[in-house]
Amino acid sequence: MKYLGYSNVGGSWAGKPADVKPWTNLYVAWSDYGYWTTGLTPAQWRAKMSAGVKRAVDYLGQNIYLCLNGQADADMTSESINAVLDLMKPYWAFVVAVDIADEPAWTKQQLKANLTKVRKLIATKGLASKPCGVTLTTYQSTQVTMTPSDMLITAGGAAGPDFFALECYVDRFTQDKGQKRNLAEVTEFIEESRANAPVTARFWYWQMHFNRNGAFPNEDNLAALAWPSYLLGRDDPKGRTDGYLMFNWGRMTGVGKVGSLWLPRVTAQAKRIWADKVARKEVV
Image (cartoon, rainbow, N blue to C red; front, side, top):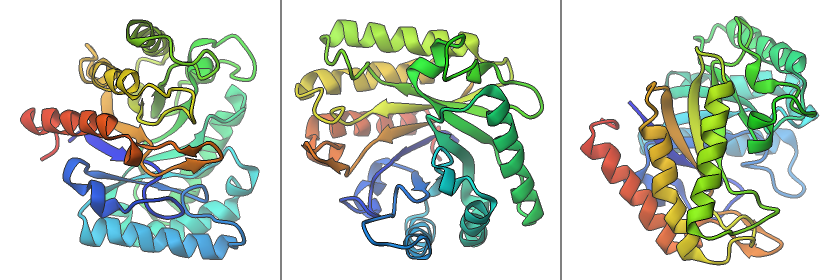
């Protein structure tokens, strides 16, 4: 099975997972970030997370992509990880991947140490082993000799990542370059990243289904990137793709409503991707 799901849907964000159920089979359970709002204690956001996961599994029949948010020191402690594992235990059979951190500024050694830590905590809880990986920026996954990445993507080995979640994003600092150049940039990032990866690596892909917090005001250009960037994963000649993550559905920032909830032409492309996966019998 291949997976497709949104981040930032429900929890502390706009929209409901039920709204996107017709064209997704994955719920992104993102510790802290997905459920925290001003004033909530860790116990309170975890209660919201537990309720969200329960709805996704029991009522929507979704699989779970678990994000531990480990790039935040408070969420990488054993206490915090154990608390998340406790709430996830009833739904562990539905977890298909554990992403330990989003764009962490870690060295190769820190990445390996934190992966080892998470795997040991999972085992200690008596939970089944799951693929454990990390989300990398395009900078981290291609500029492997530069800090702060410190060759993150070449970690490899028994203690290395089982998968990498790569971002099919255009550089936000240079913004929208037009459809042809946008795709060329994403293609270069993905192909170079995969070339840098250990031969045993699997891949997930973060699709750019938001307007880069206002940096991409042309929705047509944003929508035009969705399908061909999906094909980069779908048609990987080595068949290393496990799923696709769409960032994001209901995110609101200081610049306004930036997610797919308010981008109908982008959402139409997500539905096109889902239809392709159904036709290829990848989601049944």
